[in-house]
Image 1 (cartoon, rainbow, N blue to C red):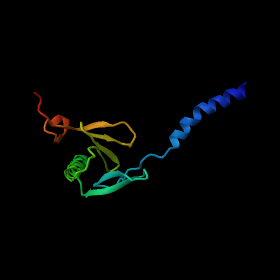
Image 2: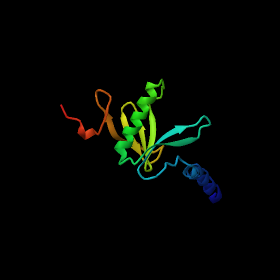
Image 3: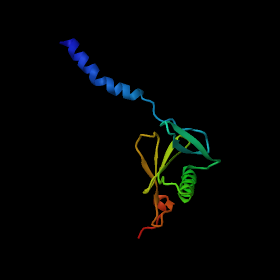
Image 4: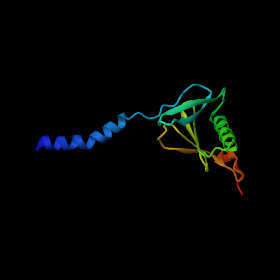
Amino acid sequence: MRIRLLSALALMVLPFALAGCAKGVDAPTDPKVCWAMATTKDGKVKFNRLADNVPDLEHCAAQLEAMRIKFLGLGGTQSEVVGDYQGTFLFLQREGVFTAQKYDGARYPFMVRTGDGRLAVPGAMPQQ
């Protein structure tokens, strides 16, 4: 009875233990470097250096937004972009920019889109 109970418990815990061992996406942590993340045809993740001497997360988001707009102007169709700044992921989406410490982790609002589509820090927008 005790062996069956322990075996059942081990089978219940095993998937969670293995999930903890799964390797996530490791973001570059180079200081003051803004990275654009791309997925290759074989499904691997690659980080491309976008800009150096970037002072903060906000300026990296601006660099990623400029890249996104340039690619759309050249006929690209990808409207969402993922980047990284010093180990923090940036997700540029239709609603704005979200940050996360892990690629598949919780995302937090960082910047919002204004009525004309520009990005702004949420507290900078005048209230009506």
